[in-house]
Length: 442
Image (cartoon, rainbow, N blue to C red; front, side):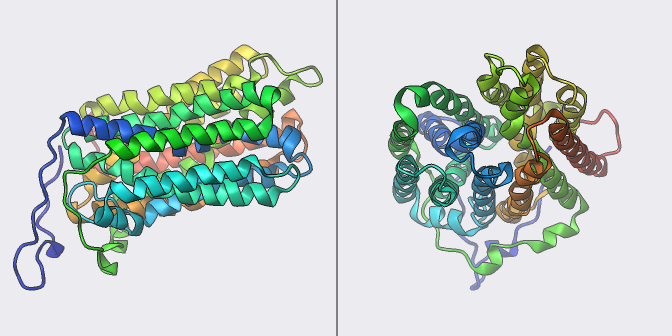
């Protein structure tokens, strides 16, 4: 049950008159579901290539950037995630009634009419630039893929995700699970495109086709994403930050749990293909090796949408704590010992499902404990804090892989599994601080 909070001081203007009230979310309707469609396409076009970076990583290590270390190559994907998360922290789209960070504040002031098309142009231009980048010139991939694409994406993905809360209230977790799931859908489609098209038409034309898909998604999104709320003025700096939130031990445990979780969560997505090739050495990789990432991303969709549908009934904290613990156990018990194709397939399928809830439910967990006027700021600061874990996770994993031998990968696996279990420990602590009743729906 959502808690009630007293009115915020920010809700009263300096003259003493109440601030204009925002309209109540209608919780459905044609315009609402069209917005969900547009937000889902934005997620597919922006977070999809990021979720599918493992396929780029495999191609770069094998051919395109083979002169560079796994750590340097994986940094391209980790910088993408870092910038998206850090801009999430400095962006606010209010999830209920308040403004919280910079880019979301721009979205509130100018709306989707300008920001969605501008973001689409920058993102597709970045991919077109990537398509003409040269092999063994890693700075070009850093500039186009890691920085420019992420910069364009961040001004659309999180605002388009959070605007769903302008249309939904009681079913907001369910509604937001669709764009979150479509980000994982991109993690299926894009790796398959790369795997099938690069041998036929080359890297350049394959990436140009990806850029065209991204541009088409943004065109539809620009026509379908709307907000029922009027434009708002840019907020004061004091409204962008809520550092006092860290005085709340539940919030602090959520942030720490999220940090340790993302430190480990992306390592299987980045390295499962390379691990499978090392497990098959000195023979050729198994036929399904290029598709482990797609399988993992497919089950992540179920893991992000399915638990969100039941979390309000059985408890958001219960789901996020148990699923994170399960992902750590799977890494240590299944991935560590998996060498044959059937066991790797089982790991990819089950791990993808287990890692989904942490991304789908962290924001609803924060919303549950936050005063309405601080929701956006608290969510933003949590993701900004987690961005350092995202930046460090996969490069740290790459440090363990000095040679492409199975023992080197097992050091990476031990690191990933232990970090996931530490993250689950913090989520469990947050859950117990909410309620010590074992079977309570928290």
